[in-house]
Amino acid sequence: MSSSVSPLAPKHVPEMPVIAGVRLATAEAGIRYKNRTDVLLAVMDKGTAVAGVFTKSKCPSAPVEWCRAKLKGGKARALVVNSGNANAFTGKTGRASTALTAKIAAKAVGCSESEIFLASTGVIGEPLDATKFDGVLGRLAETAEPGDYLAAAKAIMTTDTFPKVATATVKLGKAKVTINGMAKGAGMIAPDMATMLSFIFTDAPIAPAALQALLKSGVEDTFNAVTIDGDTSTSDTLLAFATGAAAEHGAPKISRASDPRLKAFVKAFNQILANLSEQVARDGEGARKLVEITVEGAKTKASARKIAMSIANSPLVKTAIAGEDANWGRVVMAVGKAGEPADRDKLSISFNGIRVAKSGARDPSYDEAQVSDAMKAPEIAIKVSLGLGRGRDRVLTCDLTKEYVAINGDYRS
Image (cartoon, rainbow, N blue to C red; front, side):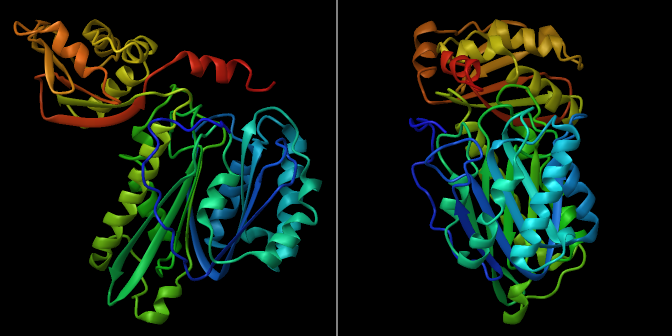
């Protein structure tokens, strides 16, 4: 966790309301860090529905494997998250650690181990001493309160420079329902499902299958459209919990994601995912510029996504932006290497609304001074027009600075 907050951090942190059926508590367990919280326990009421999406990495962490197996039950009573150690690439020891953590948590909360969900973030390859949770989780279960989401978000940070939270309140039927979310992530971000860690809580009465469908759909144009460095984590976990408490106030019970009564909820739910994923991009390790890349005129949306990601993950593009250089040649390179349909002589490129390349060559009206001035902005919009079809997509990334190298050069030190 950095002591210097990213210059791209949101200027406003929302007041996070209470969600009926959810209680939170944090503690210092000494997993890796000293003098800071590193464990979060979220306790949910009986009957809470759970859904999740996870990394598609072929080397998943032990907690990811645990959650995948328990998700089939569709119910959750507690979430345990630790920072400092990812419990990934830890073999039988890692699996034993997850089992012990779940056993301790289940005893503390008073539920089945199958209703415990786990997530870990931090160093890969180091054994996680789960005995450090013994006593800590029992105390947290007793002191947990329906409250401090900001403290919860701080406890799960690693190289993040600020806690990431978002909230929304909408009508479901005649009742108001609330959605709260938190996320962590600043490096090793090229999600193939979600972000490194993210958790969504709501009091809406939504069945597990419907919640799963909403989550799977929602990540595609939010978390899956963000990249920091092109590296997909072993620990990517996004879990959503629906306590159903709003049913007592008249919210209808939802069993299908296609239920028309969910329209406002789905919009708000996706906005939470979009908000959190943008905060991840804003907190990219060493980032000084938020970069939005839009590709239009592609053959398909999928093709546009691949081209946009090729641009977003290019170290040459990202370092040019860090240097405030509108080097469209590097964008051309990234388009060309993407392996998707493209016609050099139809290609147009703009930076922050200023067209620098048109029809496969430098724009006749190009003004170096104008473009250089535009590149000094903290937010950079790159737009690429292919002229081949109606496919369009957008992804978020950040620049690549010397600080990224410094952070990752001594990450385990």
